[in-house]
Amino acid sequence: MSTATAPPPEAPAKPARSAPARRGGRAAGWARRAPLLPALVFMLVVTQLPFLATVVYSLRSWNLLRPDSQAWVGLANYAAVFTDRQFLGAAANTVLITASCVVAAMLLGLGLALLLDRGFWGQGVVRTLVITPFLVLPVATALLWKHIMFEPVFGLVNFVLSPLGVDTFDWVSQMPVASVVVALVWQWTPFMMLLVLAGLQSQNTDALEAAQVDGASKWQIFLWITLPHLRRYIELGVLLGSVYVVNTFDTIYMMTQGGPGTASANLPFYVYQRTFLGFDIGQSAAMGVVVVVGTIIVAMLALRLIFRTFMNAQEAHS
Image (tube, rainbow, N blue to C red; front, side, top):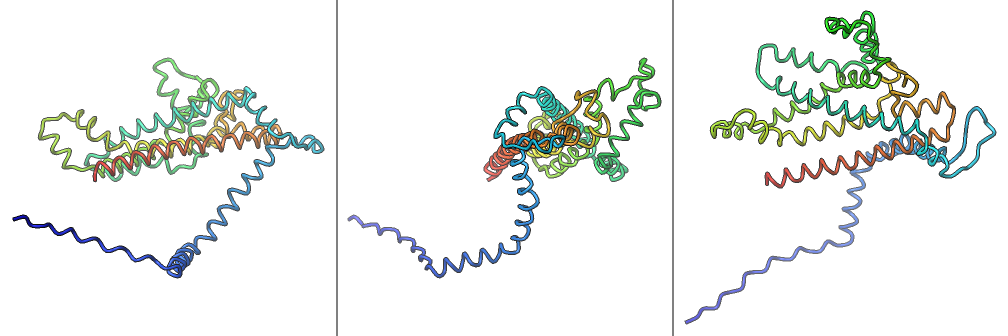
């Protein structure tokens, strides 16, 4: 004798929201966002209007030494920018300084974070001392390295290297880019160390203990457990460090003035030279637009990579 199976009960349909209810929800949403409107207007006025003015200036031929020579030239300034050898050299210096500083600072920060993650007497004092370089003003950092560390006659670097025959070597004049990179690495290493240290302290200790029980060595634990966990923090540090270091101006201005010639000038400093020393408003505005657009593109690509990493990590945990 066959018995018929009753069909499962259907889920009750959600009642459709009426038009007044939808309008009320939108009004409540706008009411919640209304206090943010002054901040949005202020941000647009402070950031976007100057950028639009820069775009307008970049389409004009305007040299302050010839006030009557203003004229619309369209994209001619951009064509001149991409054929300017000094601009291309400054772009290469920008990439070199940024990449060298970020990579070296991240490696040193990773090493310091691994050392400071262990418990020892005076740990708080040591952490405070290691963080100190990041709290020093960039101008003071540049002057310290130029006149105390790299000074040819009385500098500490030459004093330490004197047993090797390095007595009066002028680091800032002979190796300007390397000198700037060293000063920036000293400044940004604590920032990288703080990010990596936060990642180490958020690590799950159960996985580390399980790996130790299974007989894994410290190097294997670091390579297969700790380093993948730190990937998000390392990528975030590289992104933030790159965005800030690519806009470095004060260190180059105080240490090398972009010299000798334009050997150590990066893009922000070269734009400053063309604006306030060459008085060429049109081409310097075009350079500024190119720098801003390039920085935005790189930052967007890096943010997409970081967000993808976070999403993959969340899916793995779920």
